[in-house]
Length: 563
Image 1 (cartoon, rainbow, N blue to C red):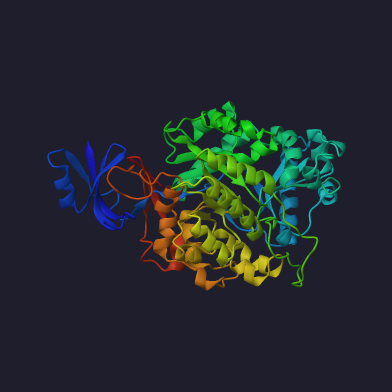
Image 2: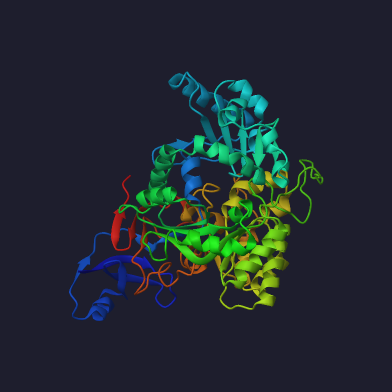
């Protein structure tokens, strides 16, 4: 039976920007328009009218988070979160710790509580959210002091760094000798300090992961994440750079693919892992196809993007390890020669992989944060385009923290897309203006208006847990560019509500080659919507992130939210 839903529908299609009636046949949209227009389109086909489900709602296309990490989101948010911002989860809110005193007090308090329930020191204390610029220095000596017997594992806010005490390194069975002699990776390990970062993590994680990311934690974390994404109106996301085993895929199918999970999970193969694992260049395409075959295209809620790949350039912005053209600055505004960026894939390996996947017809998504990192990526892409011209390649610049106006013009000339994280500006511009980037570079992070002015497709993502997975929150960040202190960072880079809504609907779908299925409300597309308590075009822009999500409508089924 076809159901005609009445309400206020924002279609994100300029042919009919707003309609009052949408006919749904099973999981697809059958017709849109006024009620009379829809009835005329349906003709003699029987239907029923539903005037109550969306009576008090403004309905948008299903909101999209273009890029997040389910394993990272599940594991970090299932830990003891002590971060620089509030994290509002379905059954608990972790309040922010914004100073060293607050962080250390919360850390000791959580350890004391664990000691009461586990006095034998058998359980690992696992916390995520630490950041040196807010929380001060952290090292093995301090962690040993507060917990000489209990293993402590601290995951830095960026997820690109780890800190362990001696009890933890003893538990997982690693030694200083084992961490030495591995080239660049060993240069990113401070054994006396108990600190691993970027490539150095490759020497830590094989021993740490079995002790930490247990099946029990993954089940609890993924289940929590399903509720979290639903509450924020997310109906589809992409995990860019996915590593899988058959057992992990079964876990994803059981939780993310469950009948009552109201969103799509899409996946990309991780090109960095291929480099780190020593996959020979001539075997890289075959390795990619093997991973994609774990979930053939069209296999349900979980789907690998065929002929798409995730590559990586420079380090994490949240660790200030992006590669910058100009030096990092110290607290006095002077160049800091000790502060340098990192490469996740060396420029040589990046150029090789870009060339390889480009020639094979793949759509390339590449993580890049610094303007010097962006130079390397753009050079590699331009060389590939010159040698093997292609049309409709839709290569995506991912994160897009630091850039110059000239680079944006080059992005436009090369026909690239941008998927940016507007949360960077809101959360980090104030602190990075004081140390690291300086005021001008910090405020101009994520140049959204400049991208749109050049006609470049722009989508938004959270990179969860780098930022909260809240499309309304992304919109708020991009429209207002309001920082933690309440000031506006680079006002000229603010964009309109309409442009921001496009970035979490049709532009995100386009960046995945899913625009014929998702991103707008139009006949033939999937009947997937997000219902809001207020109209995003009518509210004060500063209220965008506070709009209540009433529920989501996923492929013809209504999933309401309860307070």
